[in-house]
Amino acid sequence: MGWLAVGESYEISLVDGKVAARSAGPRATGRPLKTLPKVLRDAPEVDRLRQLAQWLDRHAQECLNRVNTWVVSSLPVPTGLLTRVWPDPAWQDALRDLVVCGDDPAEPGFLRDVTETGDLRVVNLDGETVRLSPASATLPHPVRLPHLADLREFAEQLEITQRVEQLHRGTWGRPADLRDRETTVTDFRGTAVPSRLAARAATLGFRVSGSRVTCRVWEDGRTIEAAIWFDEGYWDSEATLGALSWSVVDGPTLRLVQVGPVAWSEGMRMATALSGAATGTGNKA
Image 1 (cartoon, rainbow, N blue to C red):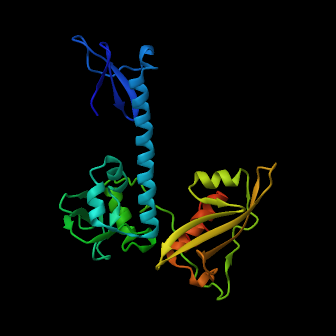
Image 2: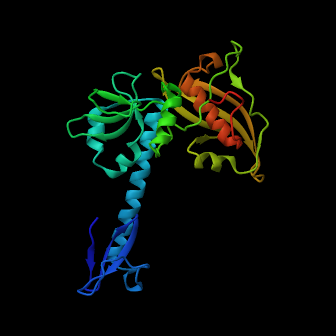
Image 3: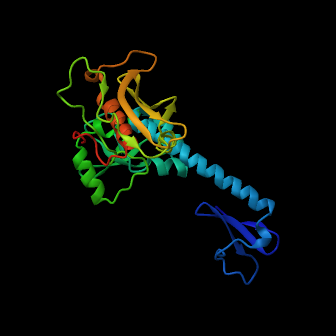
């Protein structure tokens, strides 16, 4: 953004998200000062700029959260919506270089640009920049990505860094030897977590309701909630994890064999993160 004059001696602006000042006048170098001059610290113009910086931070986080929701649930996003939000730097930061699929889910590519006419410019696995013009685009969860290993390798070659976890999001595959009537995973039961679990869960972005930590995904046309119970004493900071299960929101508890690949992976990811384990239970992809 540009520089705003404050009095006759200084100008202020946002530099890397913080209020910065520089000297004004014919002898000014144009370089920002290392610290904000004391005379400016309580200036109303500085206060308004600080409030703008706080709003921009919140907006950027909201964009990241929204795009993360699209990725976790592999939701189709109207291309017209991407066209409208792309000029916003916060949206671009969240969306750029995510793997996107158009009409053909077998041909993913890295999103590099969205044109004013609604075309998506993506780099495919052949290293070619192509234009896609789908009515909607999908930012798939990694368990739904074809050629995941190839995409990860190509991303390293391109030195791509994704702001939203997609390619390098931890994934867990559902075991093939589950019993038909099982409804809970007990691998984490009895795990002691030496910190306030509710606070830890909130920090990691999970919901806390009573003695449960939950996360939700949209899969196969319905909202699935993974939930893990915990026991945490009021005076004791150590918590103990219980069983992990899945259910349809406002519906029945699912048998484990009924849990879809995304819901399974995200539930196991949540439980693993809460337990502080570095990996899953032997079936991490």
